Every structure is written in C-alpha cells, then in structure tokens.
Amino acid sequence: MFAFVIQRLFQAVLVMLVVAFVSFSLFQFVGDPINNMVGQDATQEQREALRERLGLNDPIPIQFVNFVGNAAQFQFGLSYRLGIPVEDIIAQRLPATIELVLVSAIIALVVGVPMGVYTGLNRNSPISKVFLTVSLIGISLPTFLIGILLILIFGVWLAWLPTFGRGGTIDLGWWETSFLTLQGWRSLVLPAITLALFQLTLIMRLVRAEMLEVLRTDYIKFARARGLSNRAINFGHALKNTLVPVITIIGLQIGSLLAFSIITETVFAWPGMGLLIIQAIQFADIPVMSSYLVLIALFFVVINLIVDLLYYVVDPRLRVERGGGGH
View 1 (cartoon, rainbow, N blue to C red):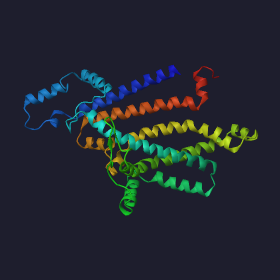
View 2: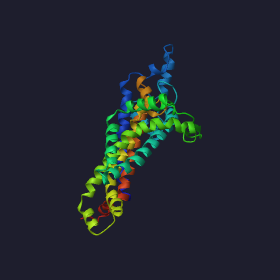
View 3: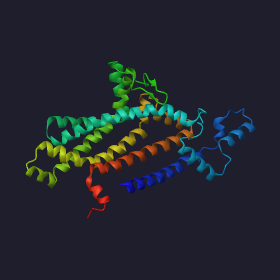
View 4: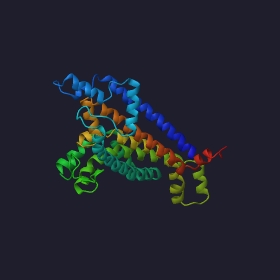
C-alpha cells in the first residue's frame, strides 16, 4: 500500500511538471507583457524596472525554474489586467467555485445513485420509465439552456430565488462562505442544480447499467440459490460490485465540475473561478490563465489519487493482487 501511494505521488509530480511546462509556454506567445501592464506614458526606465522585477530578463530555463518554484509556493505573479498578485485573486474566487461544486456533487450523488439503483432493480416499473425519460432530457439539454430555463421559471415567473450573484456571504478571514447565510443558500440553489443535472443523469445511467450487468452474473445467481434475501443480494453484493467503475466516473466528473463550471458561472454571474477565467481570456491575462491551468490539473491529480485509494477500500481483489497473493 505504501509503495503504491509513493508510485502515485511520483506520477502526480511528473504530471504537474508537464502541466507547469504547458502553462509556462503560454507566456511565450503573447508578446511583451509589459505593454499590457503599464500605460503609454511609462518611461523606458520604468518598463525596464518592471521587466527586471518580473524576471523577464532571465534566460528561459531560469524563468521556468522560477515559475515552478513559485507555483509550488502558490505564487503566480501579477495579473496583467488587475496588477495584483494572482494568488490573491484566486483566494477571492476559489471559495465560490468550491462551494458551488461541492453542493452540485452532493446533489448528483444523493439523487443519482438511488435513482440508478431503483431503475436497475425495477427496470420495468412506471417510475423507472419516468426517471429514464427525465434523465434523457437532462443529459440532452445544454447546460446554458437549463440555467436560462431555471432563471425564467424560478427567478422571473415565480420570483422565488435570486438569479445572479452569490447573495449574502460571511468572511471567516481565510474563507468567504455563503453556507452561513439564508440569502447565500437561496442564491446557490439554481446554479447548483444547473451544474448537477448532467452529472446526476450520467451517474444514474451508469449505476443502472452496472446494476443490470452485475445482477446477471453467476455469483448473484448462486447467492439467490443459497436463499439470501433480496436486500442482502442487492445491497450487500450487487451494489458493492458496481461501485468501482462508478467511483472512477464520479471522481473524474467532480474534476470536470471544477474545471468546466465556466458556463454555469457565466449564466448566473457567479463570482467563481469559471467567471475569472472567462475575463482572463478576454484580456489575455496569461498569469491568471496559467495559474488556472495548474490549479485545475492539481485538482484532477488529487482526485485521481483519492479514487485510486478508494479502490482498495471497495475492491478487496486489488489488495490481494498488490499484496502478492494473486494468481
């Protein structure tokens, strides 16, 4: 187990170095960043001082080493657009995205897994057909359209929920949260449902397909022949064996929620990382873009590591194989 974790950590470091190289390469294709950071009336001495301060006079390999070293300390330089440290901007925006993704992932799991189990166990029931029809609609409609429809129904026609912004937040010093205010929760409902709907339907259909596949296997038939109850077979054997591929997809989808919440945040003017990267692209703010790329890659690496470790918990065959007991 320890060797497995070390191996995964080594692979994670290699991945992050490759991503850092790609992120650093962005700086080489935008011309002179000094022109974006100073006004037209800046003197040559001021330009040269800023260039020296940013390390742009160093050789390219030295700049890359400095970039990796600074990124390891969560320092990404100055934003070309705002002129303030990128890490400060990320610290302001990241809590909004993480809270939105967290609520969306919980909705997708809490609703999607039971729906998948139910439709797998009761494939011909009317409720299952309703679930599948709704899921087909949810997986077919684009995210922006779902968001606009929710805004129209619950924000404009019914006037039940806010349609933009984060609502009330409380500053905890190191984290600005909307979890501690009613207005924050009301503002969170519509974007969280919008972001969760596609993942929910995907998880439901995946769990259903895996349940149907497992219920046809010989060991399930043998369990029935032994006289085990349906509850023990369905939840003690079938559901447990569907979790390995489900965990993989869920892990990747949570990473996708973090990386691709851009559309949802834009539709609801949610002040998170997605909206930040859209603004950064519009102004060619390369430090923000490169830091976003590194940060998202780090999230994917950490999530994949957690998924690999969960395999050991769910599937005992992996523990046997890694322990040398496999044949």
